[in-house]
Image 1 (cartoon, rainbow, N blue to C red):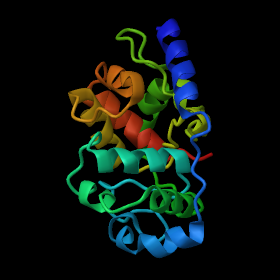
Image 2 (image 1 turned 60 degrees about the horizontal axis):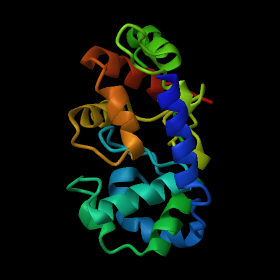
Image 3 (image 1 turned 180 degrees about the horizontal axis):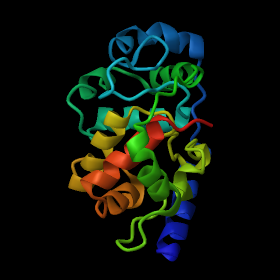
Length: 202
């Protein structure tokens, strides 16, 4: 597992090196009018099934938009939204949402202990890797390796994303890193990690 993780981190660093977005936040705000219906005017989506974009790494958002546009990431609501975007549009949108302040929610106190245990230490018995290896102890991710910020994210969205990776219906994780991790997680473990992240602050 250690060797797999090291190789994955090195590979991700090489792939993402120099891929940071260089967008114009003001232009992104003007282009974001269609985005705010789902993601909110400041990137804090009002519906917990849709992700918060506020404070997310620009490079990660650009990658997701490119994946929606190419069909690499299948999401019926997002594919038509990404289709008309140029690469500069994507960079501008990413710059705008990255500049917004994330509003952190509250975690279910009954789920926090298990969620934190998995996030920080994994599940040794079943080989679930600790989330901190890629997303860091405070959940801010690693922009150089294109690992997203996940702290403060809606629990319902995190739950949905992990189950999509587990089912293999979401396949845009380089090297299958997230599919590998999620494939070993139970529904209860996913729910606990999702709740823990919803209340995790930096």
